[in-house]
Length: 400
Ligand SMILES: [Zn+2]
Image (cartoon, rainbow, N blue to C red; front, top):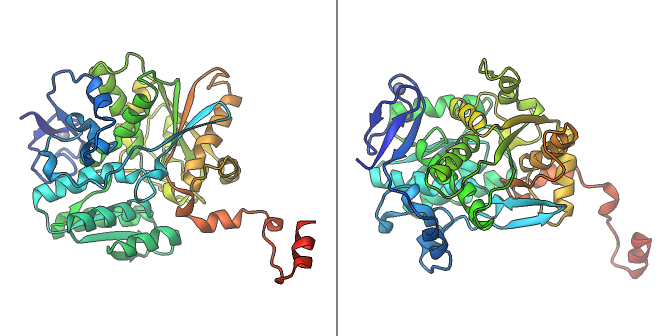
């Protein structure tokens, strides 16, 4: 077999067509492949391509994502997100994906695999972005989608999106971690296909955030890649992406990863502070709902990513991340609160001397500004919005 599912803990291999999310030893799974070295020029040659698979920022790298006939790929297409230069830093905006978050990168792969397996329905637990993405790709694939959402804890924008694309929403009494436990149990008992980031096919798609970034930098790696950390799917995927990029000769030097958590949802940060001696679980509370996760499923893989890249894990307060969000918004870029942990984290790490003055930094913004309008409205200065009568006098008074 040229592609297989491997257990990270014990090395057991499973066929690609087997439906499973953890090993019999309960270790996490990863997709691995035998490939001769792929020249990166292949991806550069595809860049101006006209077909959806070449236009997709995921499937442009298809030999290293999933070995499947192009006619079977469910692609919007996705990816191809922009890189913005502001204040001497770069921001890659994954909120420019079709459903407004980076989740589309993993979802195109997981739903393509679901279709190939012939499953009867797809499901996920979500803080909102995953459910919107799943709903959109399931609609395209003609598969029923079932999403498990923590009741009352999803932003209105994300819930509306999920419902609009046609998913069945189960609003679970409890937090995200309760939804996650429930969907794991339901998927194994009820035969529905689980596409949370515990599903290793999701990770294969999320790797392409890094590869596309490196391609946009003409394969010259930055010193730092900074990103929000919640369920740790991206932390896992980014480490794998960099490992493979070195292995296949696309880059010769590893950038350092900086995973940033909200202080109220910081189990990975706590673990990092103890050199990963223990795994922590917390009751999560933060304004950044996309990373309001207390028991991340991809802990082990994420530890490997941080260790291999000489990476760091930092935490920021809600006040720090909302201040950073206002600054990103005022740059004319905009993002949802979780994404702003990046800039807040960079500021903290620069002050601490971890990130140097001359270091080249890329922040990954994971979700669009419009994903969470309530949190934005709550932090807009009152004087910025004025109600007036329809008279010139009132306009003049308001602008004084
Ligand atoms: Zn195992």
